[in-house]
Length: 449
Image (tube, rainbow, N blue to C red; front, side, top):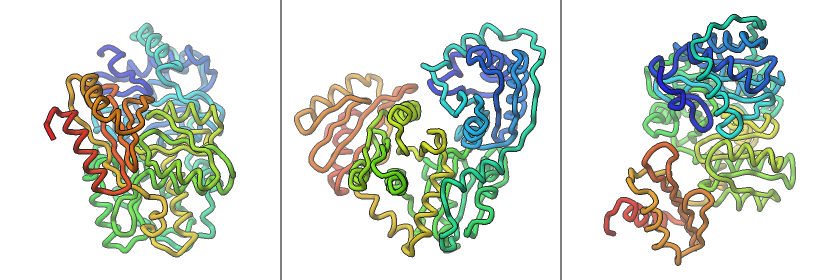
């Protein structure tokens, strides 16, 4: 095994199996998790990867060796693990590498009530203690309970979004051979939905395409199926099914910012005046629409730890990110792609317009999407762009460099893990967005305009 610092990231654990992450490591982390958190009991779930069950079993052995009782929920999505942590009042661990290739696996950890554990809230201490415990003999003393929580998860989600008044909808779902193939049938059972499944067979080798809906190529089969079947919409889930991407009846992508605005309006109808969280590269339309519906928008840095912390601080009812992560106060402030999908289904089914007509009110601007550039000297590139644009708009540096002009804005920020600068640009019209995008990219990449 290599250095644990290689696999312990800012928010989770992730590495190549078995070269970077193996059962011995998982066992040591299980013991360290109990020691650091003081957990007397915990709940564990895992995705469909071949290595996930053995790794989770090893973690359980380590946790039980420190006297903790463990509820093993077996196969589940990440938001099912959050449901388990919240409903049972237990700290939890999900074994998954989300959308990463098959050779990877990892862990997402939380305290009771689905409170996330990150680098500044216990993950570093767990890493360091696990390093000390590596290779030690561990004898389980705590109890183990195998408990299927899928039906409870499905029932709980249906209490949060009412689809009983919906017109019948034909829905194509691409699970990408990930955990959506396990959870979608349970959640949709009995609802007015004609389900067209794509790649529901659980297969951690991802034989059809990577379970990453943020890559446009992974959406092609879903888009084609929506058009060919005359479906009302399509949904694509990532490997651990905590993210959901929406496709309209024409086979066109619905921007996550538009989904954020739509769900925000629905939540504000239930809780007038509530706070809605959005990150700083979400469309400018989101805070506008939130204010128009009487809500209070709050802007955060990019990253789920920032959104979750701000939601907890403000008591926000909902939060959305450009990456198709959606967070709900009524779901222990945790993210659930399934819950966001149910809101979209309910909004569509309560009226007669197609999704493209419904979503038009929430998609106000033209966006570039996130564009990455490999840059050796990130600070110099940011300085160059700031110097050129500083007099053309309002500058803020909450997360990288954001410049807001008349009818446009862009954000340029550095990756935490790679020599990349990430650009997002948006404008009221496509030509302005394209011009701003190309001008910034030229400066970043050292090409004269």
